[in-house]
Image (tube, one colour):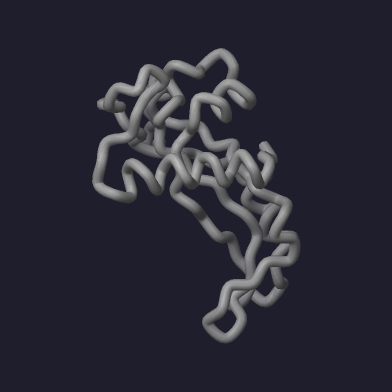
Length: 131
């Protein structure tokens, strides 16, 4: 699911103020988020869609991943039924990017932020299997 740059920036800021500084994430009520993300699943369509927007050279084109944290507002906007569970949850936002001479470049820096992963928790039951 595509998200706006503004929503991405708010998620990145929440993460930077809390978890990145070694503090616990905060939930909707401002309390420490004690049951944090175990894993995030992204479907192939999303990943291939981003890769299609990057340089075709497999040593240059790729995906830039950002560790972020759901704000209450972003959780309500994109996941209105899971605001309680997602506020303060760590997540990944990603976008297509290119690596040119050790420098990351973006085709559309204002667009293409993706955040449609399935998080555990709250979506852990049943756990994935190896089969």
